[in-house]
Length: 304
Image 1: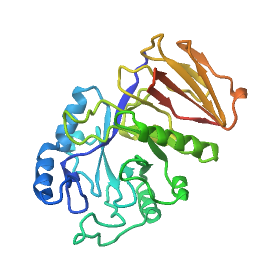
Image 2: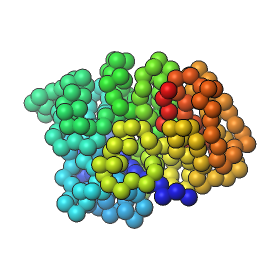
Image 3: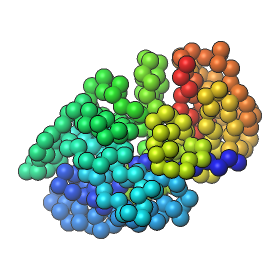
């Protein structure tokens, strides 16, 4: 097995409970108490780092709601500061960011941002900070309501948020539509971790070849040189630029789906390693690994 590394890029610390977020608001009359309980249950960035290291992760992005977490000095190379931006029209992650970008509106009527930003304005500010931008869980309750053109502004779309469900399936279908329209957008996953026992830091991960520094990790992230995996024990592959693949944690019960422009090829008897023929595909190619009805891995596309 190669010395691949795993990362979690959608996790929340207790800083997510703040004036610009509705974190913990579930019931009409007792929400102030709920928010305090949620804040108490959520972990500090330091505790997230300690838990993640125990689980064998190499990097974690903490993307708190409309704020930026305070990263302890001893974990600056391990934790990546981020912001989950947005309020009423959907959420986006700005990964590797140091200055807060205010959302388009506040959650509470009496607590509104001083400098509200549309998504287009927020992207401009995030680009100035060299941030990696993802549009998050577009079909959850807090669905993406900005116009279709906004997908062209992002680096990636979150197609796998937590356990696989119909919302994720719709996001996967949308990703394919975007790719077939010539939009070179990457896919990402994240656990959307909030509290222990209900969420798992070591589920819905990114995997990439050995990466020794945070800057190297961020560069590979921007270049799409990673795959999305269910967890570290999952069968997965990282499709190389020359279309070679090797399936880690291989077993015989998996299915490979090779997907390109207007084309899907399903392979039930999967070889542990191989090479795809570029001439068989148009514009791009990516691969998926499934077991029964559950996905195990999505590679990012290789574009031609």
